[in-house]
Image (cartoon, rainbow, N blue to C red; front, side):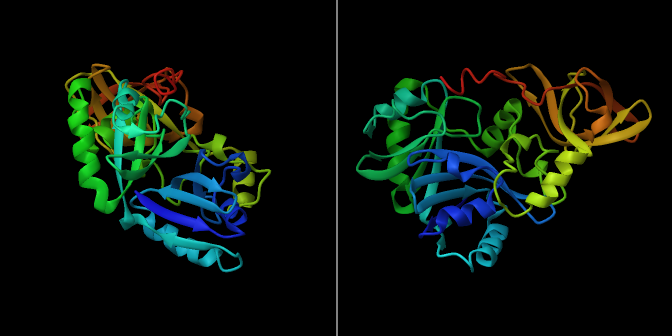
Length: 318
């Protein structure tokens, strides 16, 4: 993930220009999910902003979006009294997720994390290493992301894994974390957005606060009034032995209506699932569609909500 330290008397005003959500909803110890768009309303990154104080923030973006973030921050910060520092290489990120993640981390960190609500954070220590522990993650489970000074990463990793043995903790990689788990939860990844896709199409219209001032506001106002041309949908694949892939086209009868952006086999759901964009007129739950696997092969699928797992967020906010 990309990481930026943002401080100075105009840091809040600057960040408001950068993100589509309302920065005033933040307070010290809290985080805010948002995205950043260009002047045409196209997404170039999704991000979480954490507030330390009225003039000090920590912004976490995607790995792929780092360079675009750097370039735009440089352009738009010129008229503000703000200092933006790329601290990506200064911090490692360890994601500790699952129903027993709070128990595990409380066994090794001080102070305890019991008072950290969803999208909250606090500074803790693990084996004398100072860490920003935020209650965020990509898995759809109760969990925490630990932002660790780079030189302390091996110590924290070993401490957490050793303590985690009695909690059934095992390492998992990006294919599980940002592939299978985030897809089951309907979270967007890098395949779901670019500068030709706007937040309303990506299902992130709830983050756009048009009563604030930000880059791309005028364009997004027009898009909201007109309505998005396509929408991100979920797909439940009816055949068990067919692998749907990113880039496969979606058809309703004989008409091409969209394209798959991400797909996987979900062991918890015991079926193949996917998400992708379809034309707005066809973006309806329970619509039967066909997904082209190759020239002569199609998979039958049903359009569903893109949130396949824990739609009420009971596990996430436990």
